[in-house]
Image (tube, rainbow, N blue to C red; front, side, top):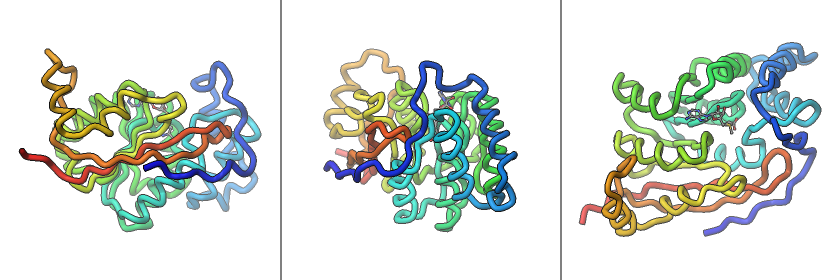
Length: 264
Ligand SMILES: C[S@@+](CC[C@H](N)C(=O)[O-])C[C@H]1O[C@@H](n2cnc3c(N)ncnc32)[C@H](O)[C@@H]1O
């Protein structure tokens, strides 16, 4: 099913330059937030933190955040399904961690894990989450997502994932999803929310989550040494939800629900 998007309203972020991250802008954002004239009102208020990050993206430099349009799709999912545990793959400067961590807390959830590869970005996420008053809910984990997922399982800090938000390296969406399947994090009721399935796009991931159990079994049988096996018996129901990048460029989020396990 394809859900219709509204038109892009309001002011867009600055355009995405050739070098659009890791050039000092993430630390610059911290100075912007902590030097903001409204800092007292921003402190402890997730929406004001998001507004201030958006203000930086609109008036200073582009940031590769999910932005207010596509994040609304996922906030609505959180309100509806009231997850206890969420995991995000790729945290950057904490925009999604603040938006979804606050929604999870407000709907009675317990823990939001933000997995981020770059230790400097992870430090920024921690400061932004702290500013929003969400440090009790959002746990930032530094390292490659696959290593962090394995460690969380080994240390028994993670058993089930209610909502998995995929927003890191595009080629890792499918391998990390299969790893989560292998680690039994995915079960009936788990929801996968994958960002950027139009810009830049992720055909292998879309093919996988839109495949039937039989198609996935056949594909797995045809691979001599699969990089990551996964569990082809999980039944997925997937929806393409259109939206906008904060820069005004069209994009979409793929929302996939695991509806059960096919045994025969
Ligand atoms: C698009 S940004 C995430 C944006 C963030 N989710 C938001 O909307 O506010 C992608 C992030 O994924 C991180 N990343 C890339 N590969 C990763 C990996 N293998 N494990 C964890 N994080 C990774 C990058 O360092 C970057 O911060």
